[in-house]
View 1 (cartoon, rainbow, N blue to C red):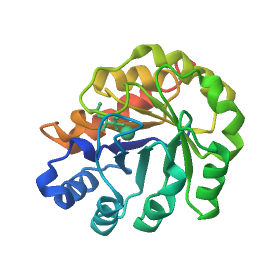
View 2 (cartoon, rainbow, N blue to C red; view 1 turned 180 degrees about the vertical axis):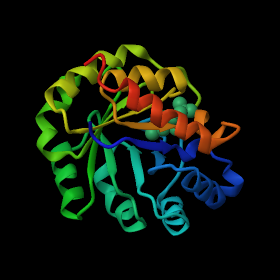
View 3 (cartoon, rainbow, N blue to C red; view 1 turned 120 degrees about the vertical axis):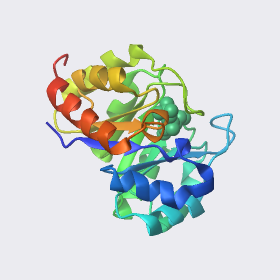
View 4 (tube, helix red, strand yellow; view 1 turned 45 degrees about the vertical axis):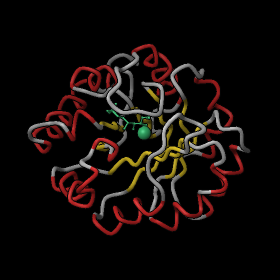
Length: 222
Ligand code: DX5
Ligand code: ZN
Protein backbone atom coordinates (compact mmCIF):
# COMPACT_ATOMS: atom_id res chain seq x y z
CA UNK A 1 0.00 0.00 0.00
CA UNK A 2 1.13 3.61 -0.47
CA UNK A 3 2.63 5.27 2.60
CA UNK A 4 0.19 6.20 5.37
CA UNK A 5 0.15 9.96 5.95
CA UNK A 6 -1.68 11.50 8.90
CA UNK A 7 -2.24 15.25 8.71
CA UNK A 8 -3.74 17.29 11.53
CA UNK A 9 -5.57 20.30 10.09
CA UNK A 10 -4.35 23.57 11.54
CA UNK A 11 -7.83 25.07 11.14
CA UNK A 12 -8.79 23.28 14.37
CA UNK A 13 -5.71 24.39 16.32
CA UNK A 14 -5.70 27.02 19.06
CA UNK A 15 -5.30 30.16 16.91
CA UNK A 16 -3.70 32.02 19.80
CA UNK A 17 -0.74 29.63 19.86
CA UNK A 18 -0.31 28.54 16.25
CA UNK A 19 3.44 27.88 16.18
CA UNK A 20 3.21 25.82 19.39
CA UNK A 21 0.27 23.91 17.93
CA UNK A 22 2.31 23.09 14.80
CA UNK A 23 5.11 21.76 17.01
CA UNK A 24 2.63 19.82 19.15
CA UNK A 25 1.31 18.02 16.04
CA UNK A 26 4.82 17.25 14.79
CA UNK A 27 5.87 15.92 18.20
CA UNK A 28 2.73 13.76 18.30
CA UNK A 29 3.89 11.91 15.18
CA UNK A 30 2.00 13.78 12.43
CA UNK A 31 3.46 13.06 8.98
CA UNK A 32 2.39 16.45 7.59
CA UNK A 33 0.29 19.46 8.55
CA UNK A 34 -2.81 20.34 6.56
CA UNK A 35 -3.31 24.06 5.90
CA UNK A 36 -6.71 25.33 4.76
CA UNK A 37 -6.69 28.44 2.59
CA UNK A 38 -10.13 30.02 1.98
CA UNK A 39 -10.81 33.11 -0.10
CA UNK A 40 -14.40 33.99 0.86
CA UNK A 41 -15.50 33.33 -2.76
CA UNK A 42 -14.89 29.66 -3.51
CA UNK A 43 -16.15 28.95 0.01
CA UNK A 44 -18.11 31.26 2.33
CA UNK A 45 -15.27 31.68 4.81
CA UNK A 46 -11.81 33.23 5.10
CA UNK A 47 -8.87 31.56 6.78
CA UNK A 48 -5.11 31.69 6.34
CA UNK A 49 -2.72 33.31 3.91
CA UNK A 50 0.92 32.70 2.95
CA UNK A 51 2.26 34.22 6.18
CA UNK A 52 0.66 31.44 8.21
CA UNK A 53 2.29 28.85 5.95
CA UNK A 54 5.59 30.70 6.39
CA UNK A 55 5.15 30.58 10.17
CA UNK A 56 4.47 26.81 10.06
CA UNK A 57 7.45 26.29 7.75
CA UNK A 58 9.69 27.95 10.33
CA UNK A 59 8.11 26.02 13.21
CA UNK A 60 8.25 22.42 11.91
CA UNK A 61 10.09 20.19 9.45
CA UNK A 62 7.12 18.06 8.29
CA UNK A 63 5.50 18.88 4.91
CA UNK A 64 2.75 21.50 4.69
CA UNK A 65 -0.11 20.01 2.67
CA UNK A 66 -1.77 23.24 1.56
CA UNK A 67 -5.39 23.11 0.40
CA UNK A 68 -6.39 26.11 -1.72
CA UNK A 69 -10.14 26.67 -1.54
CA UNK A 70 -9.85 29.66 -3.83
CA UNK A 71 -11.49 30.66 -7.11
CA UNK A 72 -8.36 31.88 -8.90
CA UNK A 73 -5.46 29.73 -7.62
CA UNK A 74 -3.16 30.84 -10.44
CA UNK A 75 -2.81 34.24 -8.77
CA UNK A 76 -1.69 32.91 -5.39
CA UNK A 77 0.25 29.68 -6.00
CA UNK A 78 3.63 31.38 -6.23
CA UNK A 79 3.18 33.13 -2.88
CA UNK A 80 2.25 29.87 -1.13
CA UNK A 81 5.15 28.00 -2.74
CA UNK A 82 7.54 30.72 -1.62
CA UNK A 83 6.10 30.39 1.90
CA UNK A 84 6.87 26.65 1.98
CA UNK A 85 3.65 24.96 0.82
CA UNK A 86 4.31 21.43 -0.50
CA UNK A 87 2.11 19.69 -1.62
CA UNK A 88 -0.08 22.42 -3.02
CA UNK A 89 -3.66 21.44 -3.86
CA UNK A 90 -6.25 23.19 -6.00
CA UNK A 91 -9.91 22.36 -6.63
CA UNK A 92 -11.08 20.79 -9.89
CA UNK A 93 -14.22 22.98 -9.63
CA UNK A 94 -12.18 26.21 -9.66
CA UNK A 95 -12.94 28.21 -12.82
CA UNK A 96 -9.32 28.31 -13.98
CA UNK A 97 -7.09 26.39 -16.38
CA UNK A 98 -6.68 23.45 -13.99
CA UNK A 99 -4.01 21.65 -16.02
CA UNK A 100 -1.90 24.78 -16.46
CA UNK A 101 -1.98 25.51 -12.72
CA UNK A 102 -1.05 21.91 -11.81
CA UNK A 103 1.84 21.96 -14.28
CA UNK A 104 2.99 25.31 -12.98
CA UNK A 105 3.06 23.94 -9.41
CA UNK A 106 5.20 21.00 -10.53
CA UNK A 107 7.52 23.29 -12.45
CA UNK A 108 8.40 24.76 -9.05
CA UNK A 109 9.37 21.21 -7.86
CA UNK A 110 6.34 21.13 -5.58
CA UNK A 111 3.90 18.21 -5.42
CA UNK A 112 0.63 19.09 -7.13
CA UNK A 113 -2.72 17.99 -5.77
CA UNK A 114 -6.27 18.08 -7.07
CA UNK A 115 -9.30 18.22 -4.77
CA UNK A 116 -12.93 17.43 -5.50
CA UNK A 117 -16.07 18.36 -3.62
CA UNK A 118 -18.49 15.71 -2.31
CA UNK A 119 -20.97 16.15 -5.15
CA UNK A 120 -18.34 16.22 -7.94
CA UNK A 121 -18.08 12.92 -9.84
CA UNK A 122 -14.70 11.20 -9.66
CA UNK A 123 -14.51 11.26 -13.48
CA UNK A 124 -13.84 15.00 -13.18
CA UNK A 125 -10.25 14.32 -12.09
CA UNK A 126 -9.50 11.60 -14.66
CA UNK A 127 -8.19 13.98 -17.37
CA UNK A 128 -5.57 15.35 -14.92
CA UNK A 129 -4.17 12.19 -13.36
CA UNK A 130 -0.83 12.51 -15.20
CA UNK A 131 -0.42 15.98 -13.73
CA UNK A 132 -1.08 15.22 -10.06
CA UNK A 133 0.75 13.65 -7.12
CA UNK A 134 -2.24 13.62 -4.76
CA UNK A 135 -6.03 13.51 -5.17
CA UNK A 136 -7.97 14.85 -2.19
CA UNK A 137 -11.59 13.82 -1.69
CA UNK A 138 -13.67 16.27 0.32
CA UNK A 139 -15.91 14.34 2.68
CA UNK A 140 -17.71 17.50 3.88
CA UNK A 141 -18.72 20.67 2.03
CA UNK A 142 -15.57 22.79 2.21
CA UNK A 143 -15.42 25.96 4.27
CA UNK A 144 -15.69 24.89 7.90
CA UNK A 145 -14.25 22.36 10.31
CA UNK A 146 -16.31 20.22 12.64
CA UNK A 147 -18.88 18.91 10.11
CA UNK A 148 -20.14 15.32 9.76
CA UNK A 149 -18.50 12.86 7.36
CA UNK A 150 -20.41 12.24 4.10
CA UNK A 151 -20.12 8.47 3.44
CA UNK A 152 -21.45 8.79 -0.14
CA UNK A 153 -17.92 9.82 -1.23
CA UNK A 154 -16.50 6.38 -0.45
CA UNK A 155 -17.45 4.60 -3.71
CA UNK A 156 -15.69 7.40 -5.62
CA UNK A 157 -12.54 6.77 -3.59
CA UNK A 158 -12.66 3.04 -4.29
CA UNK A 159 -13.11 3.68 -8.03
CA UNK A 160 -9.97 5.82 -8.16
CA UNK A 161 -8.00 3.39 -5.98
CA UNK A 162 -8.88 0.54 -8.32
CA UNK A 163 -7.57 2.55 -11.23
CA UNK A 164 -4.34 3.68 -9.55
CA UNK A 165 -3.05 1.42 -6.76
CA UNK A 166 -0.02 3.63 -6.02
CA UNK A 167 -1.58 7.11 -6.15
CA UNK A 168 -1.63 9.22 -2.97
CA UNK A 169 -5.34 9.53 -2.13
CA UNK A 170 -6.32 11.80 0.73
CA UNK A 171 -9.60 12.55 2.46
CA UNK A 172 -10.66 15.70 4.29
CA UNK A 173 -13.65 16.44 6.50
CA UNK A 174 -15.35 14.71 9.41
CA UNK A 175 -12.52 12.27 9.99
CA UNK A 176 -12.73 10.46 13.34
CA UNK A 177 -12.06 6.89 14.52
CA UNK A 178 -14.99 5.38 12.59
CA UNK A 179 -14.62 7.34 9.35
CA UNK A 180 -10.86 6.68 9.33
CA UNK A 181 -11.57 2.96 9.09
CA UNK A 182 -14.25 3.39 6.41
CA UNK A 183 -11.94 5.60 4.33
CA UNK A 184 -8.98 3.22 4.68
CA UNK A 185 -11.15 0.28 3.63
CA UNK A 186 -12.01 2.16 0.44
CA UNK A 187 -8.35 2.88 -0.35
CA UNK A 188 -7.45 6.20 1.28
CA UNK A 189 -3.81 6.40 2.46
CA UNK A 190 -3.64 10.07 3.55
CA UNK A 191 -5.93 11.43 6.26
CA UNK A 192 -6.71 15.03 7.19
CA UNK A 193 -8.22 15.45 10.66
CA UNK A 194 -8.87 18.75 12.39
CA UNK A 195 -11.37 18.63 15.24
CA UNK A 196 -10.62 14.97 15.98
CA UNK A 197 -6.85 15.27 16.37
CA UNK A 198 -6.48 18.77 17.80
CA UNK A 199 -9.34 17.98 20.20
CA UNK A 200 -7.96 14.60 21.28
CA UNK A 201 -6.88 14.36 24.94
CA UNK A 202 -3.63 12.73 23.75
CA UNK A 203 -2.83 13.49 20.10
CA UNK A 204 0.16 11.16 20.04
CA UNK A 205 -1.92 8.17 21.22
CA UNK A 206 -4.71 9.03 18.78
CA UNK A 207 -2.33 9.23 15.79
CA UNK A 208 -0.81 5.88 16.78
CA UNK A 209 -4.31 4.42 17.06
CA UNK A 210 -5.20 5.78 13.62
CA UNK A 211 -2.06 4.36 12.06
CA UNK A 212 -2.71 0.80 13.20
CA UNK A 213 -6.43 1.02 12.34
CA UNK A 214 -5.53 2.18 8.81
CA UNK A 215 -2.98 -0.60 8.41
CA UNK A 216 -5.60 -3.21 9.35
CA UNK A 217 -8.44 -1.79 7.25
CA UNK A 218 -6.62 -0.65 4.12
CA UNK A 219 -8.13 -1.73 0.83
CA UNK A 220 -10.68 -4.20 2.21
CA UNK A 221 -13.53 -2.62 0.22
CA UNK A 222 -11.73 -1.70 -2.99
C1 DX5 B 1 -12.83 22.12 5.49
C2 DX5 B 1 -11.35 21.92 5.50
C3 DX5 B 1 -10.87 20.84 6.37
C4 DX5 B 1 -11.17 21.01 7.85
C5 DX5 B 1 -11.51 19.65 8.38
O1 DX5 B 1 -13.16 23.01 4.46
O2 DX5 B 1 -10.89 21.63 4.19
O3 DX5 B 1 -9.48 20.59 6.20
O4 DX5 B 1 -10.09 21.52 8.57
O5 DX5 B 1 -11.97 19.78 9.67
P1 DX5 B 1 -12.57 18.56 10.48
O6 DX5 B 1 -11.53 17.48 10.52
O7 DX5 B 1 -12.90 19.15 11.79
O8 DX5 B 1 -13.81 18.10 9.72
ZN1 ZN C 1 -8.74 21.01 3.96
